[in-house]
Every structure is written in C-alpha cells, then in structure tokens.
Length: 102
Length: 207
Image: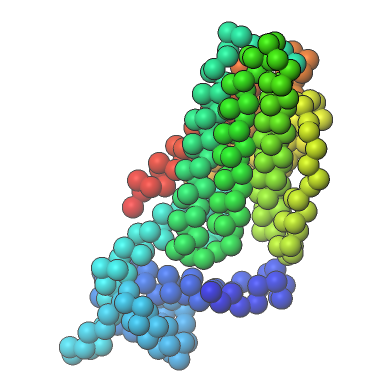
C-alpha cells in the first residue's frame, strides 16, 4: 500500500493513494456504462497520460478491468472488478459512518 | 455496591447482546481492512474487539454477583470482571479518541502505546466512570461534527450510539449515588449498541 506524503507534507495538501486512484479509475468506467475510452478515464480520474497507462496496466494485471480493441481501444470492468467496487462501497460507507475517509 | 436482585440476569443478557454487536462491528472493520488495507479500519477493529471482550467478561462477572452474599470470592470475581471491562473500555475509547485526533492533525501512531496503562483492581466508582464519560464526550462531539458535515443517516446512527453510551456511563456514574439508575444505564448502553447494529445493517444492505 503506497501512501505518498502522509505525515510529511502540510495538512492542506491532499494526496490520493494508489488504491484511491484504482478506485477512481474503476468508478469512471462504471459511471460511463462499463465501457469507456482511455481519454474519458484520463479526464474522469484526473490523471496524466503516463500515469493512466501505468495504472490501467496494473488494473488489468489484477484482473479487475479488461481491454477490448475493436475500432477504438475501450476498457470495461470484469466481474471481479464489479464485485470489488460493491465491496469497497460497503467499506467506504462503514468507515464513513464513523467519519473516516478511505 | 448495591445488588439489584429484580434485575439479576437481565444486565448480563444485555451485556452479552452488546458484546455480540461490538464483535460484529469489529468483524466488519476487519473485512474492510482486508480489502483496503487502511490502518484506520484496523484501529476500529481493535477498539470494538476490546469493547466486545470487556462486555463479555462484564456479562459473566455480573452473573456471579448474586452469590456474593454466600462467599466473598464472588465479589472478588465481580471486581476482576469490572476491572477488565473498565480497562478494555478505557483502551478501546482511547484508541478511538487518538484516531479522531490523528484525523484532525498529524499525530504519531505510536501514541496508541499510551493506552498501555498499569492495571490494578478497580471497583465501579465515580472516578472510573468519569474517565469513560470524558472519553465518550470527545468521541460524541467528533461524531456530531461528522454528522453535521455529512448529514447522512449512518453518521447520525453512530453519533446517537456514542451519545447513548456516554449517557449510559453518566448513569453508571450517578448509580454510585442513586442505585435505581443501574437498569437505566444498562438499557442506555444496550440501546447505543443497537444503534450501531442498525448502522451495520444499513451499510450491508446499501448497494
């Protein structure tokens, strides 16, 4: 688990953990109807191109998203990815009830 | 110490139910930690495991108090049970306070070690209850702030739960002066845990 900058920067600086970025990417894909182009993910998850490519590769390796190349390259969530997002939503809601942000 | 014979058994039952709910919350926090690996969930897990274990011990020790009139050893067992429950609650609420403080400003996680206090036998008295009330006032205030920010039902349930637990310990505090308050304190404590259970159901049903 990588948590960049935690405890080393002023409290006003908010960093997203690698985990949070994974979730943001997957949520963009889900929001877009579970099939979306990389540019939509790039804007939706607020990432640079290089970082997007890196994270998409990692998510593919984890088996939570899949790439399809027809006319355009698109990404969709796998069943494992959908289940993960559902579980994450529960955990987020549970932690949120105590006022904790994940 | 006053023994409420008419209430005998009910207090243990209430504490067992509350212990079960605390363990269910600890399990949910552990499941969350397994998924997202955020230490905050581990602390929540640890806090509720301690609350559950303490209540479980309290449930058993309250069950033996009725025999205290036959042999003083039972009174000693009751005191041990209360001591364990008191320190379990002290550390559990202490962890929650530290986690909330950490959220608002950078705070070393090693401060959790502060919770390791020297253990000595204590009887239910105004000092021990006042310490728990003090911790619960802070947690209630923090959860009230969380609710005022999010306005969500789950945050309201958690805030109400800690408010009930604080109220319960205020009644336990006053119980040393007004013995009739003991059942009301137990009911308030159970109600607090039932509110946490309601939150747990809501979290697990919402997709």
